[in-house]
Image 1 (tube, rainbow, N blue to C red):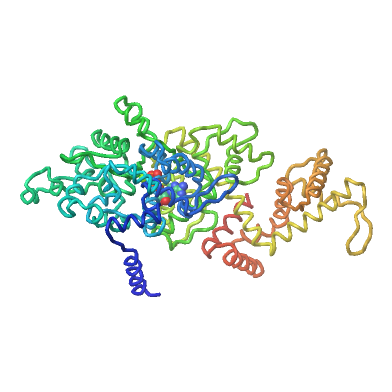
Image 2 (tube, rainbow, N blue to C red; image 1 turned 60 degrees about the horizontal axis):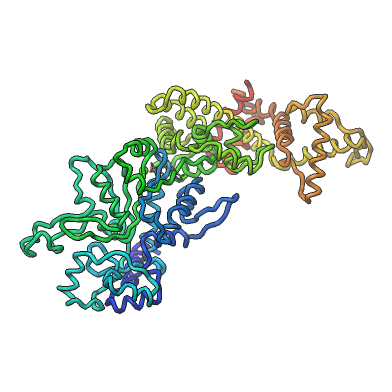
Length: 631
Ligand SMILES: Nc1ncnc2c1ncn2[C@@H]1O[C@H](COP(=O)(O)OP(=O)(O)O)[C@@H](O)[C@H]1O
Ligand SMILES: [Mg+2]
């Protein structure tokens, strides 16, 4: 469909959503679909719920945030279950300001933006539909028209509790425009839109001296005073502050704790009593979700200030730490890059992964648990299997530090370093080493890193580098062997046959000649030596493997070369050792001969076709691995 068609159908869709009618007609809608009268908090909660949820590794995953927020499943679930869910049930938390607290660039604003954009879309659906008194700048809830004396009766008939009183402006309009006939007041369906300032607001603190409370609560419209005769005529007031406009929906408070106190007190009353004061009018009822965000330092100094005590108790804090999963961190970078002007640049395989390894390491705290180094912890957090540890251990690790993930390197720093690596290179192609180098160089310019942290971070760059060396070697190795899996499997089967014969003191039968032979000691040792199994230890090593195999068999599972970490490592190293010389010679000769050239070209083609490289990065990889092997 071309864009003009799309424009037309977009307009048609918007038009089809339009509805207006009298209050009497609106009550029919309420009767049929109670959800149109839900509170702002309830609407947000149902929006999140309507996107669905699933469970992964015992953790609830809310799909509403899927594809945009990565690795924060726990924090998000806490946000939903500790705030949105009870708030939707009109419990007291609803009367508190939601404060997302976390380190810089940890996704707080992104979460709020998702909620805002989501609510705009949701208000276009049947379940999320919102209605308001027509012509009201605050899109006031039509049910406010029901006088307090009749609200118990209304509850009896409709099962809906009405909160808040009719605003001064609509009280006056009811008299002047409708002659007091509530049933005739015109109601319309509204669609939330931040651009049009309907139901979604954002407030950013500016210079405290010049910031005006009118930004929040509106102001007198002096041009109309003459017409209406007095400043206290609500028609001479512009209810166009951010709090007015966000009524029924969401109001985002950026950097809330930087705000002047007098602003905060307005918020206090709004959240606590559900109303705020504007101009010379009676209190104005508002129903909106107030969400603010801040970093930990600001939060700490805020609560340290005695003057803020009352406010403090009106805030519910949900920590939003950095993501701690390497694979999710890679996805964050992918998303940020595809949203940036670097989207056309070739980023070699593993480049983002090594950056992710580095950042996650800077965020982790070193565990005091036995036998767990930071690299193992990193793997466990990412859901990898680490021999000797299980899910329970992971849960324990997570509980060891309360504030893990609240510090370290942020995603934006990484993206900035990647972009500066790109600028430095002539070709639009960067690899893992370029990224690591750039991350390292950047540490010197990073003002807020302490000397101690810098040392640790340098160390983590080293770890990430070593991880990369392994990945790079493996990658080249795989590209050299036609089918890596196949070779690994064959070698493994061969080894296991021999081990079995050795332990059971049997002979082994040659598959071709049928001849009986002794187990091939040389082959077994050549594999075991790869992981340092000594001559004395070989017997127990082999027996342990046999026990493993039978344990697998009992459970009806297949034992393959991935089932045993050390054995897998041994097989990989052995395969690589066999190949090493070939690779070494082919990748590091300055003037390769014809057959070497042919082999290199084949490998380059395979790296490009099957492993995601381009010709620049494939050649860089080969050169690097060549140099590693010649060390
Ligand atoms: N866990 C995450 N999942 C997805 N994107 C993230 C995550 N953490 C940070 N980002 C990305 O990093 C950048 C900064 O995030 P932002 O939401 O502005 O952070 P904050 O408001 O906490 O400072 C954004 O591009 C955001 O998409
Ligand atoms: Mg932010």
